[in-house]
Image (cartoon, rainbow, N blue to C red; front, top):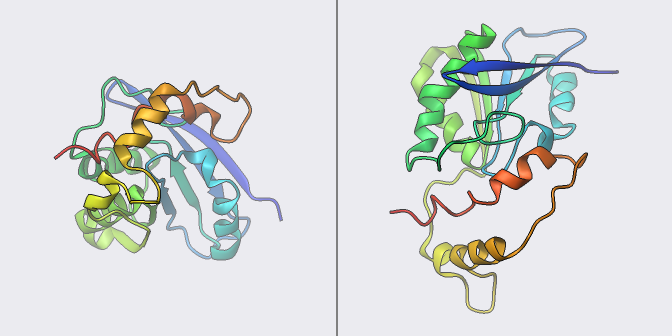
Length: 192
């Protein structure tokens, strides 16, 4: 069974947000499941997961690229320390309104998980279900400092990435995310 999707862009305060919607052939529910990507994700990196969800759940699925990711507008500055709350309280409701979504279910992965929990708490009865996978609740000291004999620290990873030239791979899944995301990993992890 082929799952049909449509792409659109929403204008949000001078920026554009890329949105993809998957539609079930036969719907068991009109309440969409909204996917919130991880800290380095974008719509394309969900790969076939949304289409599988549509077929299994019989409900629409929606995913969007946050500002600075994928096909959405580039960020003009680094994310604020409160970017998780900002996404849940400012951008997520704007996306819902722009798509005419009243009731919703939400699935968030990694930092998207924390955003999903905040969006669910904010929107109360409008949120029919929330799934939070591998959400970050806090940053452990060893993540910042590194593990003896194990993976390096966040600071070391940033230095290595800054020293490497990472080529843009046109046509690759998530290629539109790669270049502008390299400056972001670890930025907020290291902030107080």
